[in-house]
Length: 102
Image (cartoon, rainbow, N blue to C red; front, side):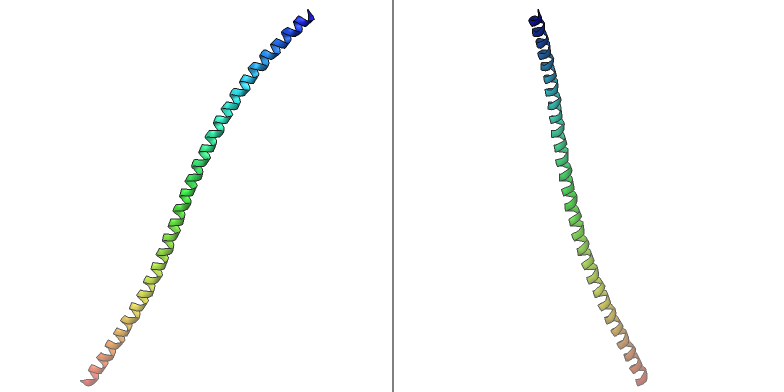
């Protein structure tokens, strides 16, 4: 009888072990699926950040070009201002000479 009872208990334990093993296998499979989804999300985020970094670099380069162009325009404007002042000074001189000649 004891052997029969022990055999029954062992069979019951093996049945429980088998069902728990199946449950653990399903949970591990679910975790694997979630891990794969997480990896995919992380890869998408990385790609987005790389795109943002490229955009920021392009904006920085454009800002440098705009800054250089603004400096060049400022230099040209100063040069034009000097030439206008020279023309004005020479016109005043011509006017003075014309008035003196009268």
